[in-house]
Amino acid sequence: MVVFGETLWTVRLLGDVFLFGSAVAVYFSVVTLTNNRIGAGVAGIALIALHVPNIGQFTGTGLVAAGFLSISLWALIAVRDRLWGVAVAALALSLAVLVRSNLAICAVAIAALLLILTLLRPGSHLTRTSFVVFVLSGLAPLALVVLLYAYFDGLVPLRLALWDVPLSYSGGG
Image (cartoon, rainbow, N blue to C red; front, side, top):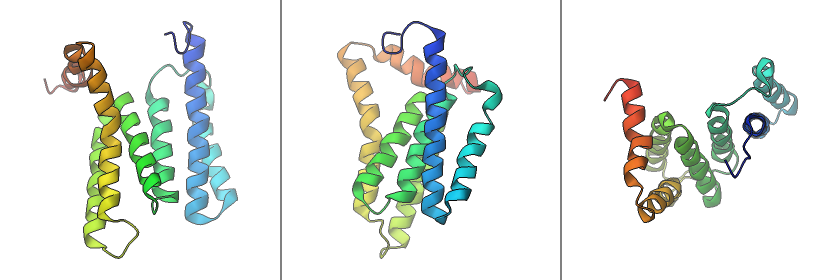
């Protein structure tokens, strides 16, 4: 609690910050795809409008993960032809997975799609290097977390938090 303070208000404010950040990322993603600023603005406003009854009430991790997913979406759309854009997309997606482990299937699906696109469309802007950068950038945050937990002899609680508890909640364990 040291990072964000000891009050629920700071957690709620963080949820709102990620909501508005998601709206901005959606806006820029839509502008990149359609070159329609009005439509992009409507998309961003619609995202916020869906949450208006709960502004200032978010205490869960969903909006934090959505914020990271929105950044990943923007990077995959807007700067996918640059290696740093692919790296940003993977890092943001990896952070979303660390926040909500049930999003791991999204990360695997996007990585598989990138692999398929690099193999089937050799003349496109996606190269095998793009895929390797995506995978390594996506694994970097997880590797850092595992190394930190291993250094402080905390791999058992990490396994509980990332694997055992989510699996038991899903009915698979």
